[in-house]
Length: 131
Image (cartoon, rainbow, N blue to C red):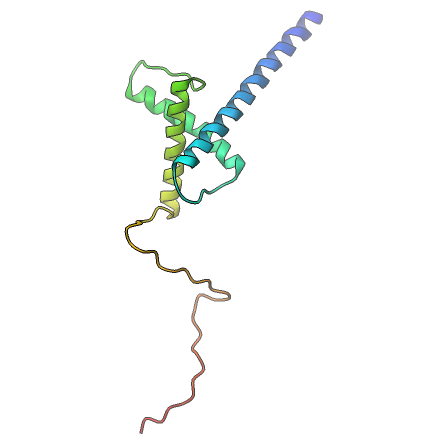
């Protein structure tokens, strides 16, 4: 009984270390991708974490797809660079699909805030005699 408890405890510790390593790794790669791309960043800490972890899956997958037989561990320096690139791609495509990627060579049109309706109400004007 004591041997099973010790083995279960060591397995739980290994899983906890792996989860914490991925959380830290995902946060770092997500933050670095947000720092590389200028502008306002969507999402909070959970979105940054998910973007970093998703970026490592996408980056390592693209690397193994392009270079057949080449396998990189996500928790390595090369894996960190590839994961940051994958998180950057996720952030870029998110901004592209949400319409936040703009052409900065032309001046931006000022945004107007509409309070109640999208239709403009005609202004009240005094009648004008045309004859």
